[in-house]
Image: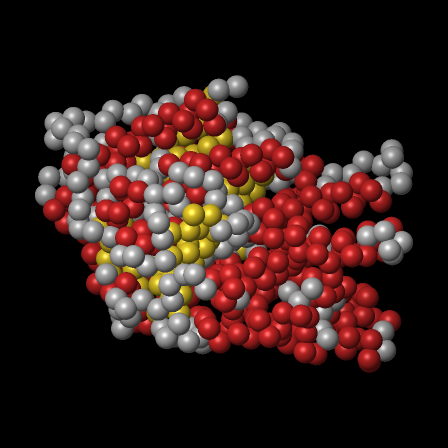
Length: 591
């Protein structure tokens, strides 16, 4: 593998969610550790599953991996980091300042800004604190999905400006107060990231148009902030030998090879590696050791053995949803599981039945227009554009709060509105506006990857608590966005996953988080099922066999109801192909 030739001390794996960053990062760590190198594997992903891959509990402290003398791992938990950050700032003044002042400081430290800053604070320490990392030859970062990563890496410059010039609004003063002592550390971190002798960035993608376009954008954005030494890894490429006797495998191979031959121009000069699709699940040491090799051996499914699967379909779920005539349908899950495609498929199914539908997304990396590739009666499409929503929000604040200010006061207000917290507020307001439409029509929302979604729901919950706290007239009826999300009659949450170990565990974890917020997922959708496609290829049949355990876990342990969507020969782009995703059997209901 080219990306492993003479590796520098720091290796970063990044790319769109679901492309296999964690598996490749773990396999790299194992290969280096097997070679006698002392390795620290670090995850900065809010939805980290490094511990699941190794089969042990890791968490927010450096933990040795028992099977390796030279390998340790760390999962930076943004929530735990934020709590420790709050305790560090609030602890010294608790009992010294009046309780009202302490509560005010805690309120300032309750938002998403604090979570992001605290996680970044721990992240930079690993790049700069020699006492923490002196015992390691290599530090490997399994970074968060692209949007998180870009934002994380841009923070040093952004916050440096805020600290230097005293910018920021009241909602960021608390978090910023904890950064003052770290300015030198952040500068050292940026210098380290931009030094190709110390840092190598590996862009991970699949042989799919959407993920490669995303990687091309990431490549250019990272280049602009000084991370120019980049490598490209295309993961999960189906070997051409599988195409000989299987129309499905042949279609997949042809599609992947066409994509690889038409790489975006900005990626063509990068050092390129391809990792073959494996027949086994990438969990456990034996599987990880084989990931970066040419081996495609499985556990011996007979060439005549066919996996049979009789499962409920997407259309059966839509039958039940359509009976309500209106409501909010939210598709959630880890990035890369196909939420955008399935959101479009659900919306198209509903609109095709003559029902009014508004299809929208809060995912900054969404490609709804490319997926639909056309229009349909009864279907309206939109995207919550953070940049546009920020501008709308700024103009509203300037026209109201700023109307009575003098020139100096207005200038200060404009500075406040440049705070990173402004985007969260603006997007939340757009989200709330769209929710209200669901009282008269169907609103189908393709949400952002899990970390983004939970931040959005956290903002929704904060709004709910504030409204109910301020409500003095107890007879006055008010419906907040959180109340809508908690009401199954108004909102149906569809969790999207793949029939693989890690995606199912991540969806189950998301379900637990939603339940803690009083939100009960309505159904699960298992997307891109090889088993449901009935393949002939030996490798694909092995993968189909491996899926059965995960489908059974969803059906019998996790979901109230579920549906399975098969992997198609033709990529589901365009109205006609989106309609092909459906079938007509009864929905499995475990209530």
